[in-house]
Image (tube, rainbow, N blue to C red; front, top):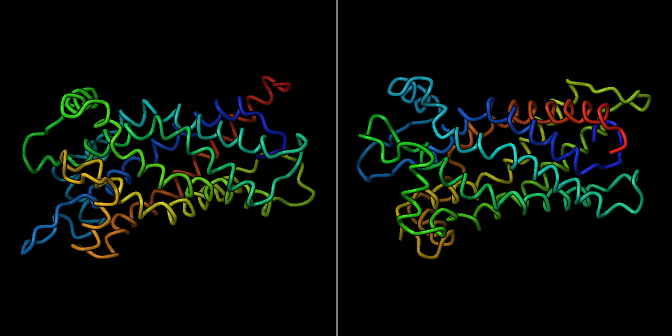
Length: 299
């Protein structure tokens, strides 16, 4: 990525895990605002719970303190290292499968395909983690006692309600979001890294260039991902039986009751989060990759 075309999926795995941890610490507060805006109930004749991103932020801090912005973080922190590790591993494998020799530079379409391939493996871990995270995030301190005491209690209650299928609700919607978005994500990062690197570059890591490319990759990812993400969040936080046909029912109800603009609810915190979180992610990834290349150059 940063310094050579030769791909090491194993190094991608460990470096991706480190980059993912960096992402969560920077991005989770924005994610909480996004989920709350996407899932707030619409009651005819009543003002919405939040008028926008700033109102959601101030009300969350007022009622729950800054810790309220980090609700549900235990679930992604527990899963984020393997999720990002598997994502970067999948991208590395996807690239390697398309290379005819180790140092071949791939086309943009091939990079997109490798990125899309990376999303398949992450969904197995991400879907239940996303469901738990969203359910914990939508709990409002101002609307009564919390239904779930934490991630473990949430898993226990979900399993009691509907078994493993309840825990994995939203898997199809997660794939619908992540396959095209991941393709655009990695393709944009690799393209910008090449486009911004001077021809006489000595191969040294450029933090500013890496952060800019990573941040823009995050923006590109979410331009594609926001509509299916809204559908996923609503499906995963709805009571059992609300949407018997899954994401199709969510889409029909949303279009009928709120219109196409509802597909972009939560867009402001998403884009506020996307640049810094992914800038830090790719910087962490490239730094970890540098260290692993120094530690085990032949791997």
